[in-house]
Image (cartoon, rainbow, N blue to C red; front, side, top):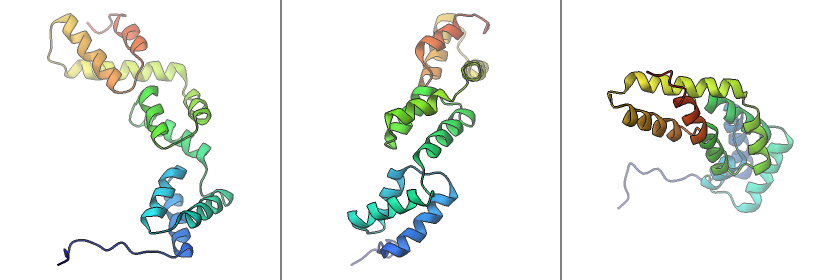
Length: 163
């Protein structure tokens, strides 16, 4: 007996899949791996998937460089992630190491430090801990979990502007 809530995956023809993939890419920047996974989910075979990917790249629906820069910009400016967390996200999406490095370099260093300070200040206002050492460690742990480099976090915390 089949579950009525389970949808049966509808297999698409390569032409249908390409049209759908174009819409998927037009909606927002995508990594090649995201599109590749989607095409496989739609029941396409490897040769069809790779053909569609190459057509999407040729027609500029898919551009890894554009994706990497958009990803870095969005995660940094909107979510205030640090470089480590952004780098891990790009690596999970199988972006080339060269492109990861280049796109991360697009973050302005003074904006980066300002974002780190803002993250720490905001967290500091919500912390109930009063013991100075424990407070500092909690702030450091939080900032590191947001992807900021430990040495930069302690540089900011050791400025003692958070008293």
